[in-house]
Length: 340
Image 1 (cartoon, rainbow, N blue to C red):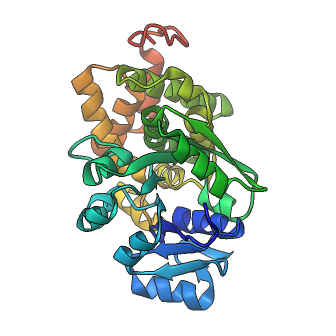
Image 2: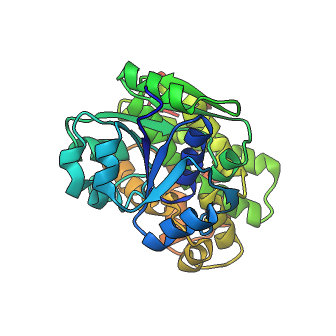
């Protein structure tokens, strides 16, 4: 890749800003697209994203802009860091500009009506694009603070994986490659749900054994579901599976954990989301996931339990008691995907 050609980052949230900074740090010119002209102007003049990454200097190589067609015309490689609810409506009007582009989705969510993952939506909007996903234990604030971090780029397009490794790999950021795009992306979307439960458990002062049980059973549950849909079970033993699950379920910096913590303190779901002030994808995912698990007849007691807490008036204590009364199955069994 020539140094001259800029790289696009679509989305002005915390993760988009952190990725834009990483690219700029590696010497690339970054066109950072966002919808809000006020936000773009604030970044341009203050060199900081005051709403999403307060206190982090946005490097000079990052150019905020609100002109999406111009960005896509100028760039071959684009990182898509839009909220799941906005992805389709932002990309659809510019679909003609996406053919042949390398588009890397970083959003960990599932579209409600279709159960499509973000890269599948991009594929639908831009059938001639080359598509990959970036996922892993990647808290935006820590990436921005240069905490040592690893991630996974997943695509069957090996050249795309190499390009992403080349532009993002740096002193504090390591990029591994995978061919299991579906499994890597599904892992990123599913773990958000369990992070809400982990945050609640922390707020309620539950023990370390309990938290560990929840995280481990969550891993078994999300793997069972993903394997049923055709993902590689080994993906869930890597960064995009257990790695992402651990960080999201144990860090107060995780948005989904924060929502769960607020619920554990007695706030309503709406109050918890309002207090956060940005999107917690797990809240959107839980309804979709419960419906899909029932449709596929995949056993997901934690998902059913969390749904009961958020939307059916049950408490976490009641759900954990029900879990403890359920018949214990085998601990880990990737061979028979229906039985653990």
